Image (cartoon, rainbow, N blue to C red; front, side, top):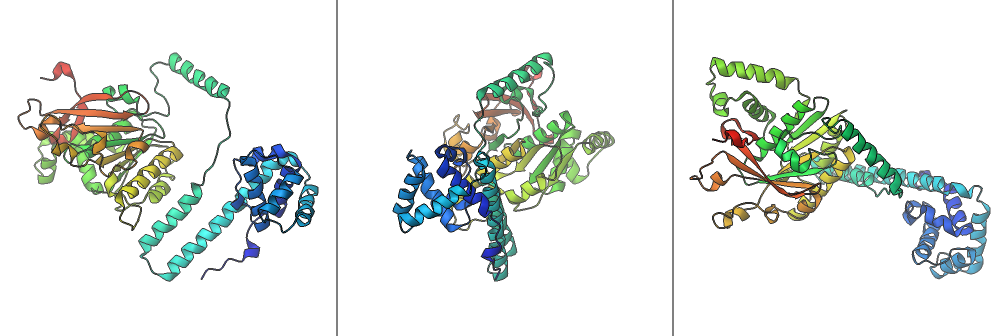
Length: 448
């Protein structure tokens, strides 16, 4: 077994003593470190307990000085008696050299704590692998979660005055007014102008859900958005994770949409000269796009994130689809698992500062409703859990012709924006061309 020598663990005795001594000398010092320090960050057990006692005093709004800390630490059995407490606390206070640098000392303590936590995680991973009780894939999932949890430890940014935020926003507005035709450098167009009128493009850190019943065109719509964004913003790189279809199948769909050659033609090899010309023309343009495809099955969010970090100018991530993702949980609670997935996808979008589009299935709710009431609702999100809560934008694809073959507009697809954290909800009408798995903005002037 992997054994960690406690005496060799990284920590700073001086930093721990200085922080505690400064708080004893200056009661207000606690407020400068309370947001970043916790008792478990201290390596020395006595210091861990002592800071815990001080922190409880801070929370209860009790005064913190030598006398009150002596009383509190004895009451909480940090020390056996007042003489012992007084002796040690006076040594801490005398050891303080630079009380104004308490934030720097606190940072040293938290960094050493992170290193120790990483060492413990490595030990646990080593022991787990050595035991051989689980399959390698399961061990890797556990290891990724351990590291991911360490990275995800709460990091609190400082409180920022509103003035600089307002000034930055005014500068942004002035630039937008000076260049009304210019696109926001951080926002990608969806390639559907009516849709962008609602969601203002694909915004960094947004988690965007595209949901619908099977056959509504979720994958096609996501691919259309991905390719359209890559065309309109060729300085950005677009990554597509396909957990269901192979990369060859995905590329066939993309070629079909762009070259206007049916998938049946491509599958059967029934391609005439005109179609070949369209394919060659389309392929030349597609090959220049900065689009990457990954069709690895059972890909975890940790693996996705590791791959995405290697992309230098990432602009958009597309995942097809949510219900095929897994965290490796074995308790059978799928709702909790999906909730964990969506929460981590939102954190990934925020961490990488890019929009993340995820296709998702709906429950059978629409089928159980009466004719004319088949339009999906937020409650229809399959294994919903926190999907609705975590997503910034939720869009449903709905085609009346799917349920009613006598519907006079078989091409009509409604993109229902059911949730929009950035603006209004509403419905955008799209033209669905099933032969080419292609969505386009519906032009009412040429609808006939």
